[in-house]
Image 1 (cartoon, rainbow, N blue to C red):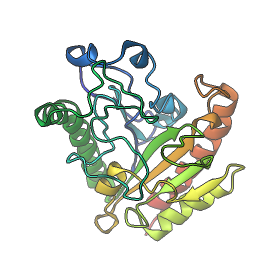
Image 2 (tube, rainbow, N blue to C red; image 1 turned 120 degrees about the vertical axis):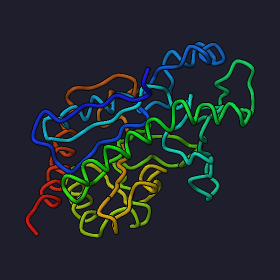
Image 3 (cartoon, one colour; image 1 turned 135 degrees about the vertical axis):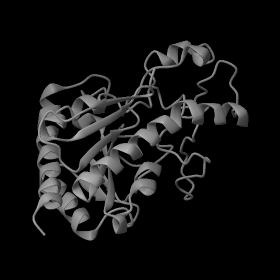
Image 4 (tube, helix red, strand yellow; image 1 turned 30 degrees about the vertical axis):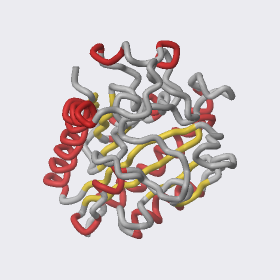
Length: 269
């Protein structure tokens, strides 16, 4: 099984790609038995239904790549050398997590790390194929349009005290402190999100993970932005079930923001 799913545009292609690296829930058979069975029935750290939330993308001409396997198998939004994303003391899971966000062991044997050989095996089998395919998509679209924007899609519970002690903002736009996209692109996205009823922050408490930081190269006409959002904005109050009414309201904000970005990217020079 490929570790990703590609949804090709159903409308005229535009220079924008959606990446959904944390929506996967599958576990490969060769390692599935190592995990705590009750936890992997519904791995809590999953960005639940984010691929469903952005299901309008292909009709806008947007290409979508999404993950198949759980981030507990390997986290596609971490540095492949497992360098930490943040150094401010927060607890954040690594490339191959051994606990969930709350610190609970996810392996039956309660291991505190994976052997390097196993990490390298997972990088080669599950991580690199996603990143290589994403790079190919970016290269192809940039070759066609001369530019491309990657929008990395994420969600999180309202409260994750091991990461941030307060309630998280509804929407958090990340651009690696302005290094992954042009000021104009950042302003279009941020202002559009701010025009909504949702609370919005910029680069705090998240500034974009490895995908945003690695693929965002504005000087090469390749930009990247990350949007983190609280799950309650499109799920029910328990943050376990998809809520169509909330999701439709959020989709309108997302659709408008992405349309403004596409218009900016495709306007005559």
